Every structure is written in structure tokens, then in C-alpha cells.
Length: 472
Image (tube, rainbow, N blue to C red; front, side, top):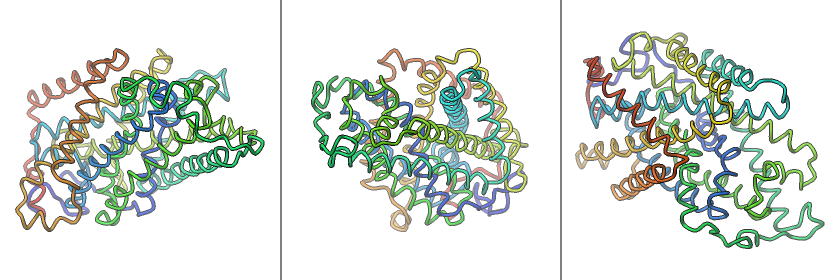
């Protein structure tokens, strides 16, 4: 048995192992697909309402913070690619309680997020089948995505690859078509539309700085999921190459897919009309003469939601598997079958049935509640990644620091900038009544976890305890 908590590939603390079956194309598309979820298709109209055209600044600012966070995670994941990723790093550098809270918080975060995603599937399927109750579509989405995850990690990777490809092609087509409308007058009798809508309706920042700040919670929810790249490290065929490649291109993808899409939409339509006449994506395609645009975009949004749900079930299963390896969840969840932690996945799928129940009981309120709670959970995860990376660096000798294969830029200033930004977002969530619910549910869950940790003495098992750098 090697020193510390690093088991050779093919061994785990309790028997069973994950398989390295995720190739470069899977992880590249997962990294890209993780950035494009329901937050863009369903949440962007609400964010635009708050900030106007200045919403682009919110996405750029949030994107810079995410880039720093991902770079911090990448530095640790390339140095030591393990299942559980940031939960394991939090445990090794910040202590067992930090690892326990981060792991279970992330499990809970993705449960909540998957509820948002299956809710979105139910809403958009309702457009085609208005007489079918929402909860039926939510249940169907959960069963289908759960089944894919239970088959094999390669099945998950393939579905995620194609789901991501559908979203990417759609947004690129919309951006190219939109540029045609703006610059060449496509769909506008050959009269170039220009970009005057960016400032013609109350200015570029019609609601002032307050509007931009108010939108940050919704913007950060849209970015939730990019850290999933770190969780793939334990099942990537070549993590030293694929993880840096995927992380390195995150910011440029954010610029193209979020800022590019919003630039086009806000140039074509007055910001204060977006969301009042249906999806801006549908309106743009219809303007280009595509009569079936509504059906196409509805299909794309449904696949985006299913993609995020697929990734969320993957994440909850791997995190529970890692917690079980550390002795911080029942040992049975560390068992695998054909390289898949099926027991861990089944518990997560069973817990998600609560989301189906919520769609039955309070269908109108589900999305607002869960986006706020999920954003708090994501911020906790991102803070733990940054703090673990700061501690990781401090524990290295000068020669070890020089030998790092993938380094954080502008260390430690960049890490402190990202931490300050995340604290600001939490403060804003507390300030605005609509998002305050997250600061009741999120901290209450962390307090409950802390009590359980001490009552049940959930310290890591002896064979998994140790520092990450002892493996190298």
C-alpha cells in the first residue's frame, strides 16, 4: 500500500475500482458542455432584466473568477489525479472536517442542481405536451439519465459528448446568424441592424452598478459545473494532458458562448423586451427564416438540461464513492461494478426523487429556490478549492514548486482576488430578498454535517489518511 491516501489504479480502500475510460474528446466536450447549461437558456432572460446590456460585464467578471478557480483545481488535479478531487484536497490540506463538509456539500449541491434541471425538462416538455403533469416528465428525465450512469463510465462520456455537441452547434449557429443580422441585414431586408440596442434603451448599464451586482448570483449559477472537470481526473486516460487542456480553454469558451451569444441577442433586441415574447434564441432563428425555430430550441434546451442532470448524477456518485473510501460514508458506497460505483449512484438517484415530488407539490417555486441554494453550495466548493490550493503551495519546497507541471497564474494574488469576489457574491445573496433563502438552507446543512461529523467521529480511515504530496 503506498504512502498517504493514494491507491494505485485498480485498488480502493474497500474493494472495487473506477476505470480510466474517459478519453480526450469526452473531457474536452464535458468541459465545454459544463459551461453551457440551463443557466444560459433559462436563466439569461432574468439576469438581463436585472443588468440590461451590462450583463456581459457580469459574465466576464464571473468568468475571470472561474478561470482562477479552475486553474487552482488544475494545479492540484495534475499533481495528484484522484477520484473525489477537491473533497480529497480539502481533507489533505485543510483537515478532515473540511474534506467531509466539501464532499457532502457537493453531493447535496448536485442533488439540488439536478432538481433544477429535471424541472427545466418538465417545463419545456410542457410546451409540447401541455396536458401531461410536470412530475411525469421530471421522473422520466431522472430514470433515463440515471440508467445511462449505471451502465458504464464510457456510456456516460458518450452521451455527454453528444449532448454537449448539440448545445455548442446551436449556439455557434445563433452567433453566426446573429452577426449576419447585425452586420449584413440577414432577415431584415438587407438593412444592417447594427449594435445601437446596446445603449439605446436607458444606456449600457440602465439599472446602474446595482443591477450588475444583482445579476451576479444568477451568473454564478450559470457557471456551476465547470469544476466537474476535476472529478473526471480519476477516470481520465491521460489526466496530465487532458485536464490542463480542458481548463486552459474554459475562459475563451465562456467569452464565445456566453458573452458572444448575449452580445448578439442584446444587439438585435431591446434588452427590456427580452423574455416578454419568448426565448431570444427562438426569436433570432425565426428572424433568419427558420420556421421551426421554436421546436429546435425547445429540443436543445431539453438536451442541455438532460446533459446537466447526466453530469450531476455522475458527480454525486463519484463524490459519495470518494467519501466512502475515506471512511466518511458507509463503506458499501466504495464498491464498484464494472468500474461504476452503482450503490453510490442509486442512493443519489433515490434522493433525486424528492425533486420529482417538489415538481408535484410546488411546481412554480422549484426553480428559484434551487438555483439560490445550488449557488451557495457551488461558492462553498470554489472557496474550498482556493483555500486548499493556497495551503498546498505553502507546503511545497522551492524545488517542488519549480517542478509543478501546471501552475496557478499570479499566485497568490489571483487566488485572493477570486476569494474576495466569492465573498462579495455571498454578501449580495444576503442583501437581496429573493436569494436570501440560500443563506438559511446552505449554512444550516453545513451545521448539520458538522454535528454528524463529530457525533459519529467520521475521521478518514487510516489507510486513506495522509498528505497528497507524499504520493509524489
